[in-house]
Image (cartoon, rainbow over all chains, first blue to last red; front, side, top):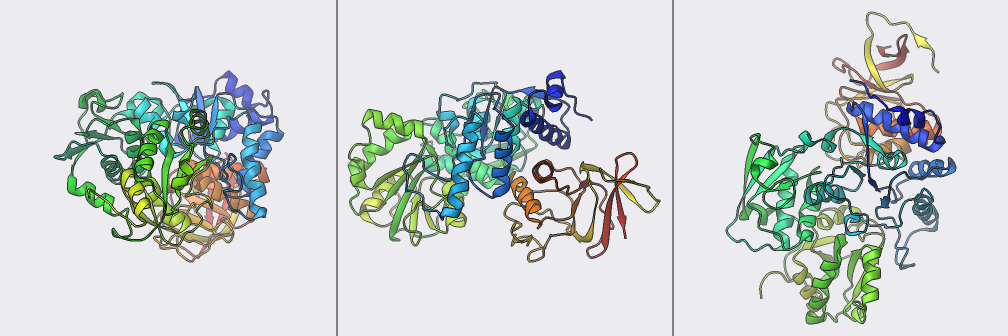
Length: 416
Length: 146
């Protein structure tokens, strides 16, 4: 199987569109050969997970594309960076690391990328539409685009997402192609309560992530979600414990009107029954401390908080009125933050400890004032990664319990 | 371009994901190793606590394993290790790996350092022996015990 490049691909490779496009096409072609793609296809957008500084090679790559006069060929959003550019001083970093990390974010803008700096590009005006071919990085964004919207992307990552953006092309393989989007393993939820709590969706996500491997999971029996944020949480959790890039939820997601549609008429390779106890067990593993543990901070918004989530949080804050000085960090996209500020929605909220964080996330960079103690979150993804990334102790709970806990100063969960 | 070599009966032939020549001591694993979270790019030390190679060092070795594994961030770690000189001298895989291929290609593009990445039969290669990777007359990868 060999990769066939069309005339425009060839001209890019030959340098007729400049040295940056040539380099991007060369790398894209080599990648496409390695995965066995026959050809490339056009994309309508890209999302680049390249703004977190991990070392000089990453910055050198973007700088070289800038020097070569490169520009992205499709609308291209950017994932979080190492800084909150909206709130200077929030991130603490040694000066020697700060300069290249800031430059990395700036260099991407010089390539024509949009200054979104969000892990939830589907909340922006660049949200793709059903059926569109895109090249996205960032695991939660990928699974959301494929599953909730029905746009088509593979799991693109380092360098390749940008090469797709610089050429407007992606390899015709994997989830870009209809036949590879069919369900392979069926998860049958056997749960009595049909209350669509946020944690139920997180728990289901954790389980399908662990058990799916590289197969597309189909969920049957999932309660109708209150909103797409619950599917966001499910997908983010599934992409945390596993490599899920696409899930179908029968009767809920756009390529799964029926189970038969989700499996494209074929039978599941495996059927997994999921009980309430399985979900409780998966959720319990996210918490490292029992109820009653003293609380240091709350972190919400991983993936970035949507406007709808803010509208649920703000009444909870007013109701519980936390006054113990426990910071409540909420990661969100800068466009969402701007909208909230224009609406005056955040006025006076700092009195409750609210600290909005834009452009980055509390688990990838030094934002939290104190790391010794328990941080509560309603995010399965944050609960999974934060202990390893920044060394905190985590308690997972519903958002309401996070806010109640901030008000009393220790972890409280469940009805009381 | 590195000069082409004659192939002999004892050579094993493979396909290059990134073409180049290298020689080094074989470091063989039956379990794939993720560069991201598995290798410290500053030193080349293996840091994955769940991997049998924990504590060994890949710098200058011919790393031999069935496949790559894990996050696409491994591309960056490999490119960074190649830049720092802590990467393997070459890698032999049984199955092509797009993530390692991207890391190797980007490093060649940026730093003009060619770390050969070869897909070939890896059976019968043991750790400790010296392995030579060369470019055959037809562009194929030639892997030879020396």
